[in-house]
Image 1 (cartoon, rainbow, N blue to C red):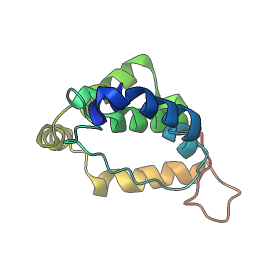
Image 2 (cartoon, helix red, strand yellow):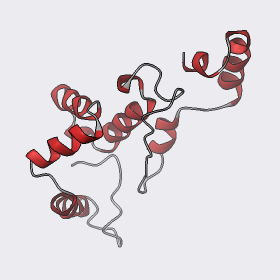
Image 3 (spheres, rainbow, N blue to C red):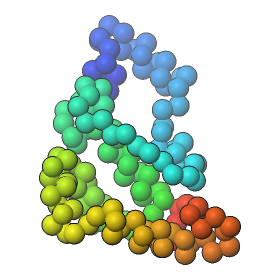
Length: 135
């Protein structure tokens, strides 16, 4: 449990009790209700956020849950595995991967905006799609 790394064992039951009874820490459920843009700052070198390595970074799970909620039709078992493979790469390896595939913000942003604008044809604000999307 993550609280074990953040508090001493002596106070573990108090910490767990407080969190379970008084704090709703299901961030994925909360952001799923928010239709607007979301900025996630993913901390990679943090003893609370990352307990054993990149695979334990809670931010990774949040990103995957958010993407699966917003774009459910893009996810298959294979695409989710590939997303996890990419997320677990270091920053330099991610940059290298994107460069070898010629994936740039300049290339992807107009494509994504165009596809998302198709999803809300009756909307006055074409940049505000509804989620989950049919993309």
